[in-house]
Image 1: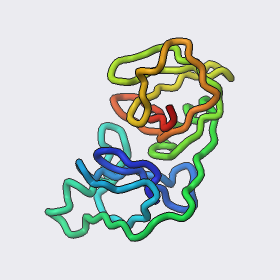
Image 2: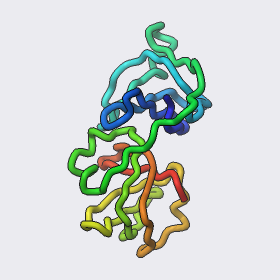
Image 3: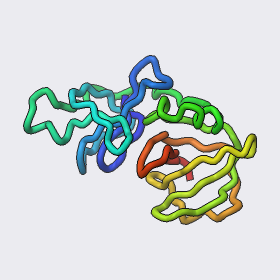
Length: 167
């Protein structure tokens, strides 16, 4: 089941849904796959700059074993994984490409470049790195608070991050 869709790929989750059952699939630009699609695929496992992914795009024309097909639509989306900031940071790689709901309250403590920011948990001070793929970070200021955060957990440019969904 496709749980997140971005310009160059999708996050997919496999039943039983939970930690370790999600993967990023690199499809290349303009694939048009929507959240909720049920897919079958074949591709190549890679660690792309530290992110576990299945690469379909770079092999599709060169190798018939690489394919990506939408075969249906999900009637019930997998639920997010509810987790605290401290727990996700204790084993961050286990949650790559998972849709997570960070249950802590947060305070924005730094606005970084390229649409990124950090926020600290109200619960225990754990710092979480955020990125703006689906979120308009221009609305943020240092000191802003949130009761929770939901999005896709990912790894890029040397850090684990939440690509937040809700703005």
